[in-house]
Length: 435
Image (cartoon, rainbow, N blue to C red; front, side, top):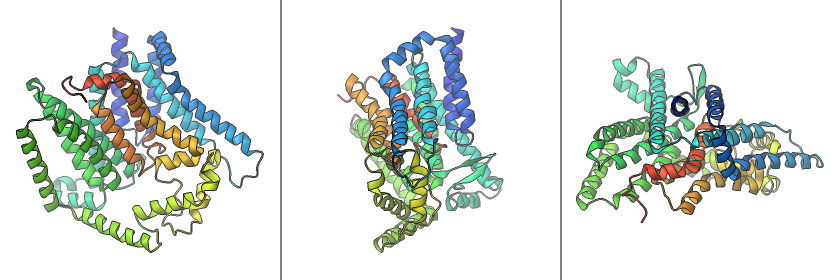
């Protein structure tokens, strides 16, 4: 019984670390997961072996990807390739796509609904703790002495943007995606805890987590993450809203409209500036200029990638991807603002560049697998679908599956959604179903 308590505690701590220090010190989090994995094996190796036997297809996929990359490289030796190879793709596949699901498999036998709820709570708290720390790193004491000035600084500086912090470096887009996921999770719990009188404390806690997540997300002023959150939240609203009474629908709709009006009246100048910049970028793109801060360079990268479709479209660039795209982007005719960019800003295009059509299918499978399992078992989870929607939308605006800041977080959640699909289905009230 004591060993079970240890493993459950490590599982909860892993959630907190993934949400908090992972963007800064991902090596520390990875080392912690290795230790937790070895402890799980020590106490329940037979259970782990049985779960591996059941989930071998999911676990074999990254091994198949590594084998494909190896064969791709060996085959390229028979041709003259104008790019330099890099072995980082094997690190990605084996250390992240394989090991993180292996840890989840080692924990699967003791993950209960209660433990899963605590895991999600620890994840959200970790994300908010990280953002509170960054808040003070950006504003300093002005948050207390000159709060209006601090607030303007947060919005105009987009929460500090990409910045060095506590010996690490934080990228804004992955940070915003963490917050978007936390907001969706806490929003889900608001709906789940709303009905029961005994759940009032949990309901209040979920509302606080949700409002703080929205506040931090608003500081980032990131269109992709805000859109990702709205898509996930819209799904939850639709599936729960239609089950409520007419009185509740009226009150809820009124609050949403009122909140929208208040937000528009108090809209920070940073949002208006970003909207103006976006309109200018659209005009520039129409004129053939792909310089800008968001939409234009992404479209430029997309055009540059597909102008080389004959090089990567079918089998991918494999180990040559890094050097290839560096050459493409640095000499791009689309006048990209940042000539040093090394990724496509799209997780699915990035997988396509690495592995061609097989690589794209590989990436899509990780998002489709949890849904296919739910359909197969006829047990559905609104939270899983909403979270997958949020991560999927975000993955189309940022390489979150490949960035060191976010890939442990994203791949851990994708593995958990698939391997613990039954627990997620049980997490939601029995009165809620698709029937």
